[in-house]
Length: 137
Length: 123
Image (cartoon, rainbow over all chains, first blue to last red; front, top):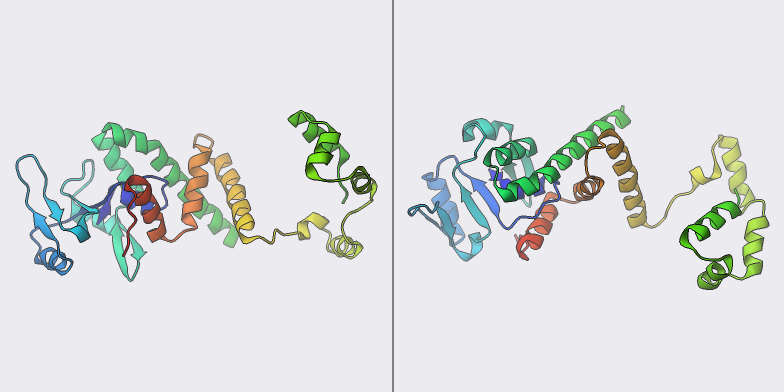
């Protein structure tokens, strides 16, 4: 599931991000290894305080996320995820309100900066949908 | 529908310029200006008649032809509505979100990554 700033951007939040965070249910899933091999990448396991990372030119944009503070387990959160079309595939993206919840829980300075924008984006999207619904009635 | 002399005067006062300066910078002669001001209507009489029959103002039947201008105008109108319902929100965030919603998700992500590190998603 795509998480973090990239997930927010995909849903329309005007935020800037440096990478695409990917939250995996299980890093030992053979499907992951197979997909990485296909694009010439590999998964580097966690070393010391460093989390696992992805190696390879074609996967340099992606960042592995192992824990999402303030949220339930992956299996719960994925049921609330939104499906967003990206090219020929549809990807699971962490819902905007859940991204906000997670950033509030982490509370890092860079997350605090992003929070007002994310909250305004969420209100905008919800209000816009309600207005469009009323207009179409 | 006619040109409002009062609106023009108000705008020139607001910008601190004289009518003479306005006409010079806009490339409009005094004659052309006073023709505009003292004409009953600038719109074709046929349009005025159609509007009267439909019971609407003639301006209601006018539409911006440039697609980008039309699009941005719609965004501005929607931003206004949403801001009235959410006055605690930053109007800039509202407008930028609405502009992004007009784009495909991949373009939104490209934009975010390009600004973040100058590298768009290329697949």
